[in-house]
Length: 556
Image (cartoon, rainbow, N blue to C red):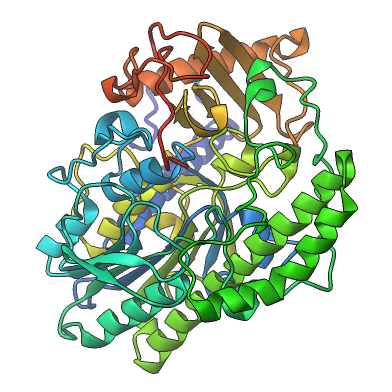
């Protein structure tokens, strides 16, 4: 920027004009300097200082942990004191979105920083195989001198790559006495899985090469369906009634066919095993005895009561939510054990601790359990980060972040270049208290798994700071929905056809098209998802994501 020049003129410029020009110039120069400073600060925040040791990274990842069941997020139904510590001592993100609210695909995104249509794992279907030859952030950290380990739920079928140590659950895994795979060798453990995963994680930390920085991915099965609590928590919440969500008896008026044809209601979908009317078959005699003591009396009273209608739904909700929260209690306890170990070993100061879940979950809202939808409880996931050298304690961030950003953030924090093919952004600047001017203002979502468990239709959409637009794109359910999240935060009535929202609808449609182009979303869904409907499924496949796939065993 140059200072203003004045050309000669027959009429002498008035002093006030000169002063105004200089004021304008100085204002613009200051603004330019501020932008440059913010850009430099954001860039600097992405790279550790050369004279500092690279940070260790502990990534604690649960399965289906709803943000509504974390007290730091305002839960009114439980307390999570150890997870809350990460909020008190670090940063809590209010708006963390997943690209696809389903287990395996979310994990593939975390590893690759790419949407499912590019990372080879868009659904939990039987044909899915994660391509372990592609670039992942653990491989890049490993190449930069990090020790890498993953313990617990993997759910990507092929063997892990990029890890010096891996000890994983096969498939979904079991809550009790789980078989596991220890670096390719089948092993069997006895005990409760959340505690076993924690024990194995801490054991690896104790035995690691202490001369190197490390990445530990501690990935829990809990609180995934069927919500089997640990023995120590079997009787917790027995003496309380958990408040019901006010949409528990939602009739889905104001929305389309997709909501009316789903199969994920507490009223109709839950099984006897979900409700602990029958027990897991792999319990030891001692474990089974504890289960009988915890559930038998209540089960007998339930059978005698012969509940019907809303009374039956209320009973199912109480049984479900209490078991779910009991599983969360074990995860919270695990987080506490990890934090205690890091402090005892003097590692806390230079270790980034991240807590998140593969997606959100319904805790009775809209009468549902499970996830999959682009609605708030499903697409939003908890994210809490403690990094003493970077993050101001007790910070709450409202920027739009995603599981798509996790690998870029870990690489940037370690000072490792981020590959150009990754589609997310490092949020290290956000952790430093700086929001880059070009940070995302909208976010793209895409769910592919229909036909499949719970019969949630294929759909994609976009969300911004206030509005959400979503498209169900199959021949028999070709519908659009739009929600004003400020006026209707519970997403009870679509305003897509409301003329008062026509301008915003057109803007969102244009933004959706832009994002699909930017993210290289193909018109045709990935080929492994394009399957004929199995027995009992409805509709027929067509184009641009309109084909369907058969229901997959154990895909939830």
